[in-house]
Length: 202
Image 1: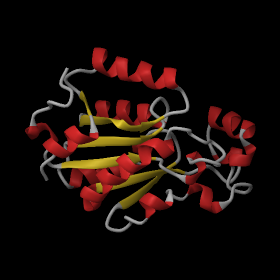
Image 2 (image 1 turned 30 degrees about the vertical axis):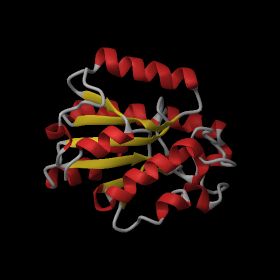
Image 3 (image 1 turned 180 degrees about the vertical axis):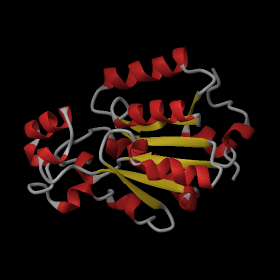
Image 4 (image 1 turned 135 degrees about the vertical axis):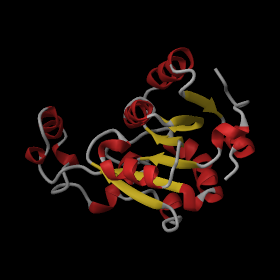
């Protein structure tokens, strides 16, 4: 498995896909992710270097549970305060440290965990002949995981920036890092932000 020594050619013509760095997951948010403050400077540094090649995703909750199918209804009945009729609109905004980069960075809204649950994202990447996605954001073991697996299925080369991810669960984060190293070599590379800066040549 390649780590920070990933060949430069593997990180050319990439897009930085930053997952769900929103106020709802920030300190004081409904779904507070304690690590977010720690990794935010690292994520912001990556965005600042690749502003026009960054796509932010936002997890958009429904107005009411009944607006979503199947088990999502059960989920949002449990989390009624997360439904948009009760949630302050600003909760779904990007955190200010990242929102300042839009534009030129772009935002794609999604109704589920995976970034590719919005089909517009895959279509946009295909139109631009993007074959590699560098992934940062929240949470390692939920929306990031779902996005990574979707990207694998779609055939993308995936570069996970391991010091630019955050989770509410240390155990969940560590388990995912182990899984990527053991089970997804050849499709997923783990790098540090420093390694990404060294090897990503637009």
